[in-house]
View 1 (cartoon, rainbow, N blue to C red):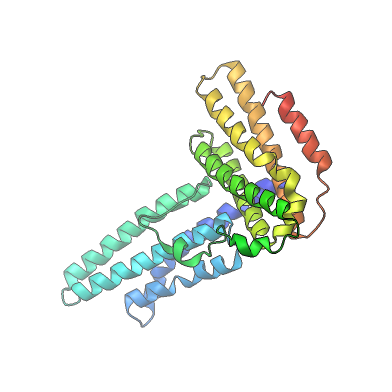
View 2: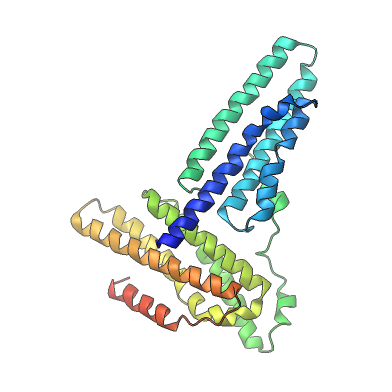
Length: 289
């Protein structure tokens, strides 16, 4: 991973942790002259603002939604216990302490997982479904009108469907990784790929610029990860370690290329990546992958 990518990855994890940690604002806000569950809901403002300000497909934005869910869960619990035990001080205090204990446990797990860059979902989380717009389901009939060449549209649709399949496969393969740094690398790649996917759905004609990349790399990454997991099962022999190092390096290069594609599409630039992509192909083929 390049220094820029590493810095971006660390920044995403930092903002994700901040979103989860913001739920602690529940307790100082309890000093306000409002019912406790109202103050708890007020603490939802910070992760909500963060979700609005971040790229919706980014790691930090998704974790902001999870933080909002946790805050809603706490508010519901405080409201329920406050209503049930409002006349019994002892049970009320005990129930509030119980909710705070659950909060600390859930928050600790969330902080740990976001520190290592893993996706985190609280039990029965539904907030992402409510707040994220579903940009992966296209109206193919509407998109077809943007293409003068129907053959090109068919190619576009096929590639988009294949891209979704390779994203799912890559996500599955990454779950078997034992190397946390490589898991973080895969998370970064999946975030970039998701963002690229959204861009191609919003501007279908930009597919022409990314065609060479899409024809090769999503499938290649899936195969690299599959190969890495197979090598990992062979043990820790010098040859296995060498192959894993090579695969790690290849994945880093693919992520770098993915970032270039995504950023150039955002800037509406022509993708002059032929040299980089050709070099990557030769590098991968030379390694026997």
